[in-house]
Image 1 (cartoon, rainbow, N blue to C red):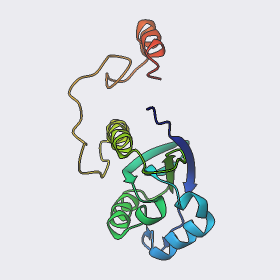
Image 2: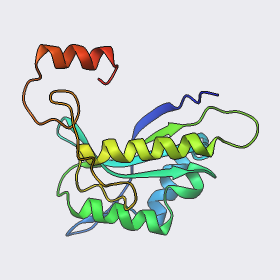
Image 3: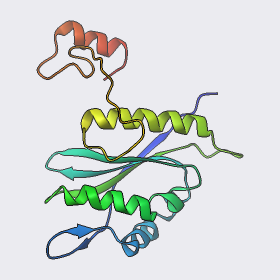
Image 4: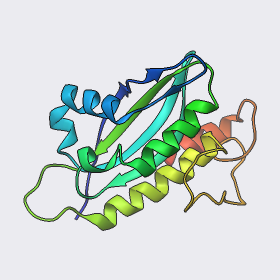
Length: 168
């Protein structure tokens, strides 16, 4: 059976701003979930990143099989977020959530795992410094003008192929 995830976000993550840098504290996490209580009950995958200028950079991809509220701001995850924040003098920390549809019974963890692997691969392509440990080996192939094929304006044939295959 097909599982269709919904995208929620981006949501700004509150931070403690020190004199030299900023961090996400447990109090900031509590503040976040107080604002987005219903979202904390959902499950699926999430991406922590930075919004700077007109763009977004993914920093960490995670999976929440219990609930976002139980898994997004654990000590291990906060450590990863601090590393990301340490690399950016400017920018706003954000979270995107890819939520499972609300169904009775156990969530489809297989589909969540597949989505997490996909998001990690896409995340590494967007940011080679993505902080995930597993699944970050960059594929050694690409398609010019479509996927991992260099920079520059793609040829018309590459654009139409990507459109046909719904890659973009």
